[in-house]
Each structure stands twice: as C-alpha cells, then as structure tokens.
Amino acid sequence: MQPSTGASPESPAVSDVRAWSLDVGLQVAAYAGVAMGLVGTFALVALTADPSETTILLVAIAVTAVLFGAGLAISGDARSSTQRLRSVLWFASLLGWAAVIQGFLVVIEVDVSGRSGQLLTAVLVSAAAVALWFGLRRSLQLIGAFLGLFSILSAATYPEFGPFGQPDFAGPAIAWWVFGAAWMGLGSRSVVRPPRTALVLGTITVLVTPVVLASSGEPSQATATVIELWILATSAACLIVGTWLGDRAVQGLAIVGLLVSVAVLVGDLLGDSQGGAIAAVVIGVALLAAAIVLIRSSRPAPPGPTAPALPGPPAP
Image 1 (cartoon, rainbow, N blue to C red):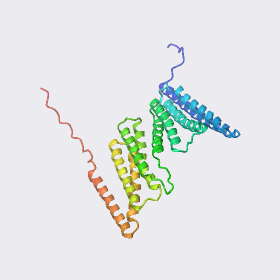
Image 2: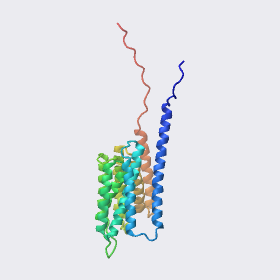
Image 3: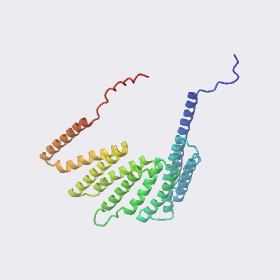
C-alpha cells in the first residue's frame, strides 16, 4: 500500500459548513458594523455643542456616501446574502439622501413646510429611489421607489387647511386609491419587480386609503356608510385578485379588510336596535352555515383505488 503523500481533501459536507459559517460571520460583522458606525456618528453629533446646520448637512452627506459606496463595492458578488446586504445599505443610503435634501434646503433657507418645498423634496428623493431600484431590483428598493412616488402624489394632492374647517380629503383619497390599484396592476403583470412586493404595497394602499378618508373629520352617517361599502368592495376585489394570482399575502390582507368592513358596516346599520342585532346574528349564522354546506358539497372526491392492469395478449 502506498503511503499518503498529502492531506486528505475535505468532504463536500465539511466545505459547505465552512462556507456557510463564513457567510454568516461576514453578514453579522457587516450589519453590526453599520449599526455601530451609525450610532457612533449620531452620538458624536449629539455631543457636539450646538452643531450648525451646515455641520449636520456635511455629516449626512458623508454617511450617505459611505453607505452607497459600501453597497457599490459588493455589487459584483452575486450571492443572495451579499445582494441582501447591498439592498439594506442602499436603502439606508436613500434615507440618508432624504436627510441630505432636507438639510440642504434648510441651509439655503427654502421653506420645506410649504407645498413647493415638500414637492421639491419628494421629487429629489424619489428620483434617487427610482435610480436605486433600476440598479437593484429587490424589495427594499421597490419600497423606496413606491414611497418616493407616493410622496410626490401626496405633496401634490394633499389638501390645504382652510380657515373655516377641515380640509376635504375626498379627491386626494381617490387619487391615492387609484395609485395603489395601478401598483397592483403593474405587479400582477410583473412590470415592476419584485412583483409580489408591488402587489402587497398596492393592496395595503387601496385598503388603507378609505380608512384615512373616514378618520379625517367627522363624516356624516351617509358618508361613513359609503366609505365602509368602498372598503368592502375593495377587499372583495383584492381577494379575487389574490386568489387568481395565488398570492396568500394579498388574500390575507383582503380577508382582514372584509372582516373589519363588514363588522363596522353591520354595527353602524344594525347595532342600534335589538331587532337589528338579532337580524345580524341570524343572517351571519345563516351565511356561515350555507358556506360550510357548500364547501362540504363541493370538495373533490378522494381518488379511488387504481384498477390493476389487464394482462396483454400472449405473444405469438
């Protein structure tokens, strides 16, 4: 037997464990380094005696540049964990960019509380967000692009507070609802990626927008009923879309919308009298019983035993 002249090669299992351990360790080090660096930076700024607005702006620029540059430095590594780290770094850099824009407008004495200042900020931030999404098609970048574009729409349509009462949110709410429905359509057609993230963002928007309208001021009973029916119809439509696409997240959000909208609607219409409450109980139980009967009657039959194959004709 020939003596061994070198070390035996590692088994594939050992190599996989070593690579996995290295990958996890690198992720822990990277995320911990980001957190420690940000906390240390904020602490230094807070400990500075009355830092000027220019100083804060320069710090925000430096932090944003470091975060973006770190993500750019690892862009060539195609591993999923590395791209996830890149996504986190770039999303954090987008938040830093928003702070840079805000700080710059303050330094040059632009009124950021007015509609024009808010719209300018939203446009500049959303431009960076969309650029980052084009560079990396991941969920955080799509969320950033969605929030940026929605901030433009909000800044352009948010009603001004009048001198004689609450602002009218009806027009903006309809515009926001259409925006969310458009994102659902784009996600269902995979125009924007990841499509599932677009679907979830659009679903949340179309379900929450009527709630915002209902919570603004004190709507009349008729207006509240219309809003509740709006939420109910939207929830049913989202459930249809989620079932058609097989997306459980959309279905879950739609179910929550259905439960809440029906409960509030029935409470407003039938909860003020004993007869109405009894009618709600009877109708609810009847609907549940009918659904159970239909579910049991429409379930597919279990597969029967397979018949044994018949012997073929004898060979000639």
